[in-house]
Amino acid sequence: MKYLLFLLFPWVLQAQNPELTFKRLVQKFNLVKSYEVVATIKPQIPLIRILPVKAKIHFSYPSNFQVQSAGISILPKNGFSELPLLFSKPDDFTAIASGIENSFEIITLLPKQNDSNIILAKIWVDASALLVVKSQITSRSNGTIICEFDYNQEKTWGLPAHMKFVMDVNKFKIPKGLATDINRTSRPAETDAKSKKGTIDVYFNKYKVN
Amino acid sequence: MIFLYSTYNELIKIALKPRSYLGLAAITGLVGIILFALKADGMSMISFVTASFEQTLRFEGEVLNGNLVAFIILQMLIVHIPLLVALVTGDLISGEAAMGTLRMLATKPISRRQLLGSKFLAGGIYTLLIVIWLGVLAVVVGRWLFGPGDLMVLNSDGLVILQENDVLWRYAGAFCVAFFALLTISNLSICLSCFSDNSIGPIVSTMAIILLFTIIGTLDVPVFDPIRPYLFTTHMASWRSFFEDPLPWESIRNSLVVLTLHHVLFVTVALFAFNRKDITV
Image (cartoon, rainbow over all chains, first blue to last red; front, side, top):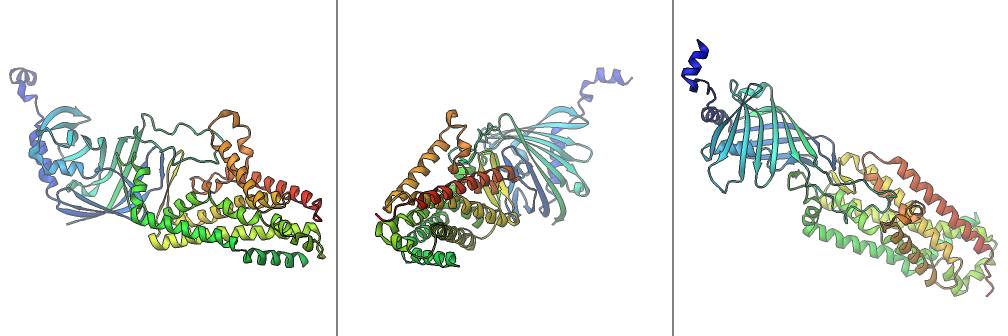
């Protein structure tokens, strides 16, 4: 009976409504106007060696992030602000359903304007909890950055407990003239990161949502 | 006891020579210029290093801080300090021979071995003073002007970011190794000084040897690979190893062994030459 119904009315199969899901996500995002959180940043990037760093992150609507760390910390360029920026201008994007993966809806967001910095965005959404679990944003300025989200107590606000950024580090090159070790007695290994991925894990705790 | 008196006399002689202050003045002037340049436009210099990373990443926090400034100063000046050391130590014996005071000195109740030993010691103390002065200007003044912070170091195998509380002991270690390396220059120039009767010869010879060995060391030609590890200039920059993570103890130990062998060689050759030196001419 069920199959007969699908044959007669095939649009019933199209359960994904990307525009509606995106709209609901934006509504949830708009609930939080500002927050403060303590973050632990753990970069694992080829050619860069750094210990985890604690930082305080202030967010204010729509996409302003201020990072205060005691020492030097490394973050993806605009990595925090790209998704909020996208959510703050929902009318600038067209949401297209791109299937379902592990029970998460995949929504592709295409910019309506040709000169938009974001070229293409893909988000994996837990439609029942209205949470973005993964994003893949390709922009003119930063290339493609993949981000995976894990949630904990603050998932009612859509605020993650952990974000994992994955980025290409193919472009990283050590300026040879500046890094000459004259005391090196053996030939150094190839220093350019070829076809390598770098990851930055950011763990959030002690959210103060305003 | 007479050895200590002789060393004291040598130190007084060094202190009374105007050229001894040339090194300290040169370091002060050069560090002043570097500090001014970094204060005025340091970020552009740093972005030159981080440019390829900043296409994808963002560095948060004070990258340009006193620790980085001190590292830049060390990197820039440690190459030139051998000249300032040799300027004084290369003159310790040949200068006296040229003035004729060596003959008078040798008539004193002190053995030639002790006399030479006191000159080596005085040369070492002068070198230590130069290194301490550089350390004070680079680390203390640098941190005072730019403030403390994490240290970002560019090595040939990547960027290393060291936390602030992990930096000072590395500087202490780096300055000790830098002193040990500069002591090789001091010993070399005193050794060459034993063979000469004019001031300028040992100084120029020391610089020529450093230049030659440095060029051999930096030329990326496989034919020099077997000799490169045994040149003292190869290990002159081993102070940089203190800013790697994890610390390459094996490499530091190897550098110290090679430098020690050079110290022994130069002191032995100098003793041999000075004991047979004709001071009557």
